[in-house]
Length: 266
Image 1 (tube, helix red, strand yellow):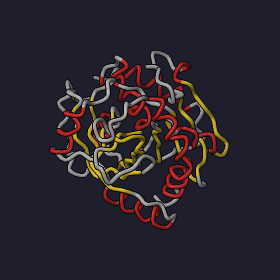
Image 2 (image 1 turned 30 degrees about the horizontal axis):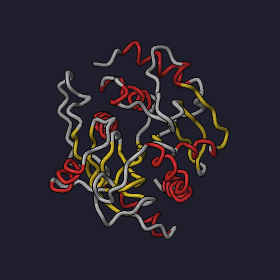
Image 3 (image 1 turned 45 degrees about the horizontal axis):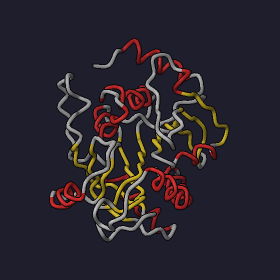
Image 4 (image 1 turned 90 degrees about the vertical axis):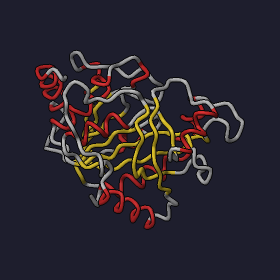
């Protein structure tokens, strides 16, 4: 259960950088946060400057809120996220998302770096997430008894808008199901085979908790996953976080174009 006093304190701190009520929120995954540097009139608030706030310790995650205009639209972004595998509880993982919701966010674009299970994908592809499988062994709503309908966890309207933007930009967007595991170890080839059998196209270690929490607040969600490597056993190559960062760096321009233009249309 969220400590309401602690939540209010965090919201008050983040509100110090907000000039207006942004309705669009962004969560940037590994290596994808450079878009925040392009915000007009940007203002930042480090997680470290917020009392009792969880800290991100993973390379490629700055750990800050960023407010400004993107394509003429006021947005509030999380540059970096909190991960379950860092030793945080699900409540801690979703706390930054709850702060965004309390700041007035109505629509959310959440991104991540993922491993390709679908062999039609290649590193550098951007995938619109149509649905997810929670294989993390936990749920952020445990203890609250909130029975949230997840039938349309990823807004059909936002997915259609992103697909249209991708077509306009000549970006070959893929579609797929994201499966979240706890991490931090990468999946074994046998686990990837299982993921394929149960319907996953992408694997990763994030996103699902925040999407569940966003749906609790009635926030429409668009999920985007950048394929940074093919999952274990597909190519026979070893996996590393450095490869994740390198791939997102090389492919981030089309990601930024997609997000920038999609924000302007939603």
